[in-house]
Image (cartoon, rainbow, N blue to C red):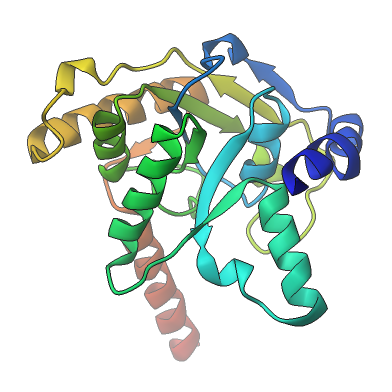
Length: 235
């Protein structure tokens, strides 16, 4: 309910008019059935502008805690998350990655278009970092294609720490689907998962024009934070 309300009434029309996002390759998105949209991740607003340029509903995975807040703020957060297509990941007693995998598989098997940021976190400096293999495993198990996506200049419109995007041209480039067929039955083969994942990341790099870094994005961020703290202590 909230998704259609946000996209077609409350937010979508105004965002399209004000920001005028452009898109290339939307014909590469399957018209029906499950598929993964694997995108680079430059800004919080990626999850807003990607669905905005597509006809189909896009769902993303998010912490269940976003949906359990109390009072007006809690209700507003829940409504917004539902409005931008976030489905809750209930971690239970398992690991977060396993819970996300289960939830993502359920969405794909139900025919949803699932948006994923394979780097795992927003880029700290605009470069494209190594993808995590959970995306490939989901595609193989759900038997769906992975569609590479590049968000363009969302980090300029909304740098980390800025709450509202500035008015700057924002684009979305979508590449040809990458089939899971060469990897059927290989969902537990680490080499196959890495090969599949790297092929998707290369497609994203070609679409985005970003410099690729063969490192874990979250680890790189932690190193930057330690360096910044060290510099602050020595100042």
